[in-house]
Length: 227
Image (cartoon, rainbow, N blue to C red; front, side):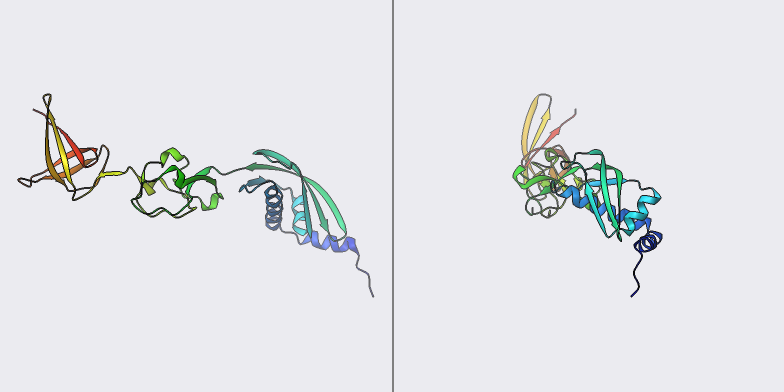
């Protein structure tokens, strides 16, 4: 039988190489290498010259060597490639980074539930699954209220939480009227939901007149009367 010329075989493989395939294969190889040192969703950027791209695209095996404990920044990786019977080693300079940590629930949180610190954790997720405007600080969520159901492990968007409601529509609330150093208390029925500091409409229990007051506490509103 005829013998295959390994040089010709390698040349054929290199000639049909795809730059896009090279990027995909190298990104996968670098990601797997970095994942050995932890479970972080590393983001990797690099540039390949034409010769390196041809070899990577055609390679049956890619072996990566470099820093075993990578940190964010620029790193030089030694890449050993096997194409047919030929072997080639190249150096690749890559920028390694991590996406920002986001706040996620460790358990499902029902709508209108006050959120506690124990309900949350900070987690780094692949940037492709991040929600625009997601919360990155625990302090921005703890003590607030979910205004929709929050799924376990899903990033919390700023719009998913609100200040806790102290007054709810239909509540009978205490109305404090301040005027000229005098404080008068009366009662009214809330026509709106409201958090601390928000203006809500309330309806007098006696004559059903509607007016606005500022939420100042639990089922409590306040009016600063002018002359």
